[in-house]
Image (cartoon, rainbow, N blue to C red; front, side):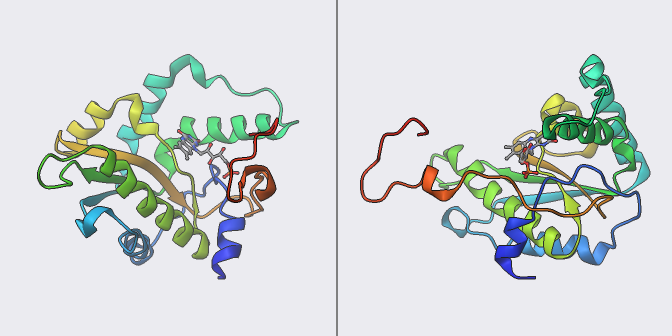
Length: 203
Ligand SMILES: Cc1cc2nc3c(=O)[nH]c(=O)nc-3n(C[C@H](O)[C@H](O)[C@H](O)COP(=O)(O)O)c2cc1C
C-alpha cells in the first residue's frame, strides 16, 4: 500500500473482530516500530505483546472496574461523536475479545549521563506511529490509546514490566469489523505558517 494512502486511511479502529492475528504479522508490526527514528539510536524501546486469554481477561476486567460508571452505553449513533463514543464503549466493555494488545514501552536512559524523560516520549511515539501505519498497510485495525493510565502499576505488576519502564501506548489490534475510511483533519492551510507565524482566528 502507498504510504500516503495508509496515512489518509489510518483511522482509529475500535470495532475489532475476535479472530486471532498471526504472530508473523505482530512481529512485522514490531519490526516496523523498530525502524523509527529514536534518540541517539539508543533504541530504548520494548514491546509487550498480549495474546493469551488470561492477559486479555485481566485487561478487560481492569478497564471495566476502573472506568466503571463512565461506561454507560451511548444511546444513539447519530453524530460522528456519538459513533466514536459507541465504538469506544464497545471496545472497552469487551476488551478481552481484542485478539492482540501491544504495549509500546521505553526506558529513561538517554542521554546515558543524566537521562532526560523528554526522550522517552520522543522515542516511543514515532515507533508507535510506525506500528499503526504498518498495521493499516496489512489490513489490521488499531487504535492508539492510553488505556494503561487507568492503573499503570497494576498492569506493570501483572505483566512483570519493570517499574522504571514507561508505557507509551496501549494498542488493541485485530481485523476490523468496519471499513477503513479517510481521517478528518484540518486542511494544511489552516495549520501551516510560511516563514513567519501568521496570526489568524484559527491559529
Ligand atoms: C495521545 C493519544 C491518546 C489517545 N488515547 C485514546 C484512548 O485512550 N482511547 C481511544 O479510544 N482513543 C484514543 N486515542 C485515539 C484518538 O481518539 C483518535 O486518534 C482521534 O480521535 C482521531 O480519530 P481518527 O484517527 O479516527 O480520525 C488517542 C490518540 C492519541 C494521539
